Image 1 (cartoon, rainbow, N blue to C red):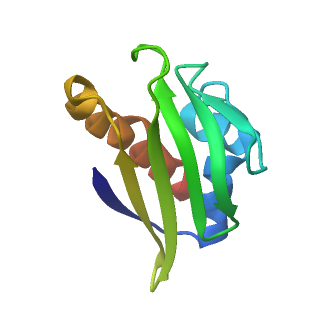
Image 2: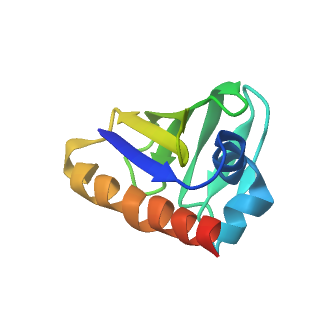
Amino acid sequence: MIQKIKFPVSRDAVYNALIDSKKHSAFTGSSANISKTVGGKFSAYDGYCYGENLELIPGKLIVQTWRADNWEAGHFSEIRFEFKKVKDGTELKFVQTGIPIEEYEGIKKGWSEFYWEPMNFFFNK
């Protein structure tokens, strides 16, 4: 799955909203515990999703393993956030691979509903 979203803020602002526990909690309205180091763990949405940081380049790239708590035990997908500076802010290219087929449509919709829309609201208030 590939999604592209534009935000009216800098690449660093978008990166930090995703990787900083307090900022992440602020835009989602739920608890997040996110390590800022490669190999560190994260959880978000009160533990609904969790994984590990594989690659972190501030303002440019986040790559993580990711799973929902209702997935088959041990199954992880990979998510990739790429940040590109554009005229009016930042374009985020989001890629997720390894989603169980029966979960695909719900996960695809969930990123928009639980991430991109709340982030836009957070950045525009």
